[in-house]
Length: 541
Ligand code: TXA
Ligand code: MG
Image 1 (cartoon, protein in one colour):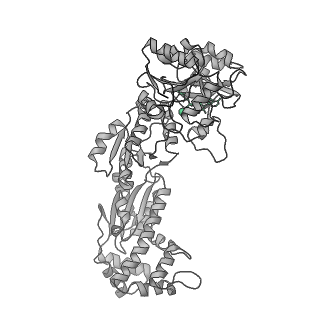
Image 2 (image 1 turned 90 degrees about the vertical axis):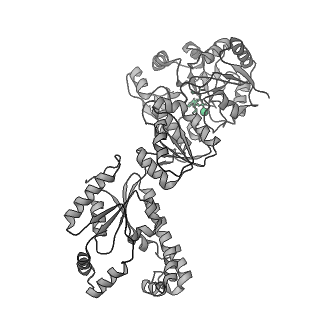
Image 3 (image 1 turned 120 degrees about the vertical axis):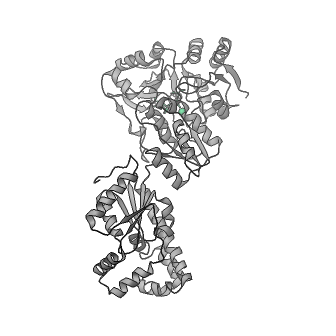
């Protein structure tokens, strides 16, 4: 089928479009929210064409558009007082109300539900069409099912050219996200989908609080049924895998540097700053500075990500209140609810006896999450672990005891033979320790993580530290501490210190720990205050 291009501002084109609708065709029309794919809501055959053109699941009901509140009356069994108040306040506008359906409305339109979704769009072309064709128009967003809603005629063409009778081009939609969906069929109104009319605005008109469906900000459980069937389908989905990264721009940038996504979706004002930072990122797509601009540009930006064929994209999420909640909700769905609050990673290194473990304990008391690489080194060789199997393959089955545990003495005898055997050992264990450390970091959202590792600089973990602090102490102090701690001879202590003589313990800060714990704690507190971005709060600072 050829798709006719019609102009919203041409009265003649509106007549042509109205004629097509009366003849049972489907066409795309502009609304203030997004483009809608319209057909006669009272004709099952016309409505069926919408589902076919979109590839929409049959269980997802359509919103019926009407010219004014009066037109609602023959479509519902009742039009209660709250609906009247809300219609008076927000129609025409981006509010869809769910009401008990009149039997005359075909079940195809409401996907078998006993309720109907109604709204009066606030767009001159949509209103003109509704008035001229004198039909209620069922119209979901005019995208292929699953892709972002269209906010320009070109978006509609990209998705549906050749599949529908016409596109009425009305330029870019002013709002950019779909209408608010409010269920008025129960005793308490329930917000099913946030949109252009905010929760606060609705509550003000009704003079009471409304409920917000959990599905607005949370993924549904596997067997849960959403109040709004549309919410169970993955929506607004670009092909790129999105991750919403919370926190400040600085934390966002540090996280992007660490994880290296292919693209960033950020606020306009971020771009200039991000370009100054040396980020290994190929594409930056902006989408506005305030919540309404972000909503207006969001779907276009999602389509842009796909045009650039990006696979992994980090997103700076909009505010979660007012109109921002609508954009945030769409992004959450587009991201399949993937969110991250990046950690701030502080690496601790330093020679034996300098007081690294003491520093780690002090930092844990201040509220940091400590990952001790010595602990990880023990964890990775638990009985039956892949690391133990790998070690046995390289150094012989004798390094594993009969009970499945690692025989450390045996491994040391075989692995510390020369530089080559050491390298083999380190290749196996460091890789596993690093992987486990990263796993722990990922699980710790938004925390200040301290990684305690003697050989931080040789490991990949060092690249993921926002800051590295070296704990040092004079040799005689270290020697005394080793003696007191490990109860070894002075010679053995000297040997252990000498073994680390060539190690490179360098970082951004050096903390001299010659005195006692109190002084060390004060220095660490001072360090955290100076390096932590604003959004990391610690309990004991
Ligand atoms: O702004 C908008 O609402 C746009 C423009 C074109 O008006 N339309 C739109 O339609 O977004 P659509 O089909 O993409 O989304 C309609 C949403 C779906 O989540 C659907 O499940 C829900 O409304 N819905 C429709 N009828 C319902 C009903 N009877 N009960 C509960 N939810 C309903
Ligand atoms: Mg839709």
